[in-house]
Image (cartoon, rainbow, N blue to C red; front, side, top):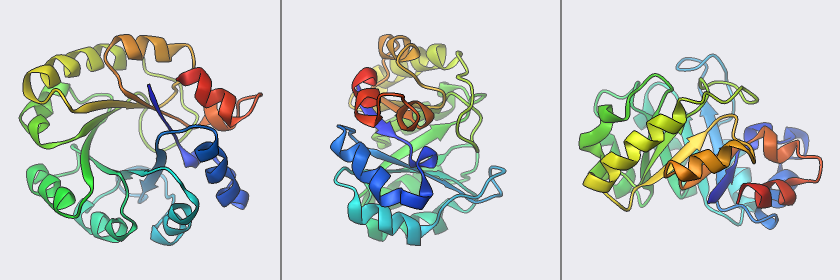
Length: 213
């Protein structure tokens, strides 16, 4: 299981220190939630802050766009050379074109699905992406309760991936902990995003990351 702690749950007063802690604690990706206050009812961080994160991170950035005008935001963050950029299918009119643009910039493209969006909606895009992110909460805020239907959605997505693009990863974001991660693994999930569980773990971030793995 790959672990991508969400810096949305970090202490932004000591962000560099908190990013270093997860990288030294064994994470695989650094998950960065970018929200524009339009697609979701919250506003988070822009390229100035993410550039500071990129300078101290020793693991690839996993940038999750929760925005309108995806192409504009891809251009903003592409110079930071993240490992992944994911965008929401619910917001993108021309997903195939955007996928091609992200890949041409040397970044691995990923698609995100909200809790109500069936995996079948992106079946014919699976051959072109490297990862699909399934939301297990409604996007916009950290610390929400896990929506359990993501397990079934992951199973359905896994079946489609086996048919269309077996190398495509499945990522889950929202309310993940050391208990439901077992169900997710059994459903075919490869990557978990965890914010509150990692940063608020009583034994520290390294113990939380180890528990998820």
